[in-house]
Length: 464
Image (cartoon, rainbow, N blue to C red; front, side, top):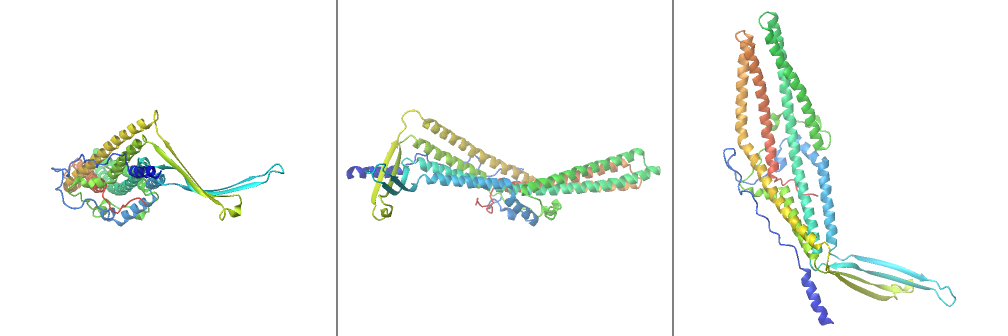
């Protein structure tokens, strides 16, 4: 007996280390190793890529708004709950690899119906494991591994959600500042237009201006009034969008006054030389954990073709007297083993084919995620490489338009030029100033976009 048992135990021990899952090898990135170069791109700079958001956003009010969003945003809270759920599921799957011990106490009494029959009592107490599966082929191990990778993927998804939330809050904040600037510009133009209408009406009454001049002046005034109403709406909607992201009201004292005060308080995120930084981006890490989970799923599906062996055992005490259960009872032990092996029918073949198809799906998803991340960074760097020159050109354009308007207005007031030239100059100046605000907004939002696209923010941490 012992000669037969020992080889079986050795074989069982060897099989316990068997893993039917294919070996995971990280896929090669289907993207260039370096960031793009060309006329639209600034020269690449060596150094660590990425930047913590607290360093990027130096404005203390914006920092406060972001901190509140990270605490109160409901979508982020839902993502965190998803992480907690996945972690609990992993704990459940892992527990199947260990036997579950359960205790049982029972009492049985029998009363005789005839005088010749006496009353009897039986008391039992035992502890044991029920239907514990020997994981000889790694089915339970791979199911646990798949649950672990799912948990890790949701954790990376949570980090991605935090990163996106920070970027969205910052973008909403600078958009609000931009629309406030445009509202202020419209109000200034409205006031200037009102003065022009008053002056032109006075000149018309004196016979020094034509009725057409007054009508032209009124078009500028009415356009400005319309823009004031439109921008007031946008400012209110921007605030609503910001408060939705924050998860509650935002005090007036925390709102931005203008783009000018934010311009020097939002930094530039370094991109480094290598695109390898993308492999640390949370959504890429999330996709890789999903791919690893698919490999484990294949292992579990393959193991299902092999026998399943379950053990049930118990050890305990039995006695006819409760007082003797722990002192005079008889020790008893039992054990059973069962095995099952699929022969015909069943879903094992379909499950294995499905698991392999899922691996191909998550492999393609992983590669597509890396490629999309590369494009995000490349697009943001292309915008960064040209925005400085665009802003400088826009500043020169506004300065020239301001000078042109000042000269045309002065000549009109002196009676040496027509109102039409002053009107054209005023409209041009208004449009150029609007475009300059839009260009500054593009610059600030691009800084946020580079931060989000690089995806390297060590201060975010993982899910708790």
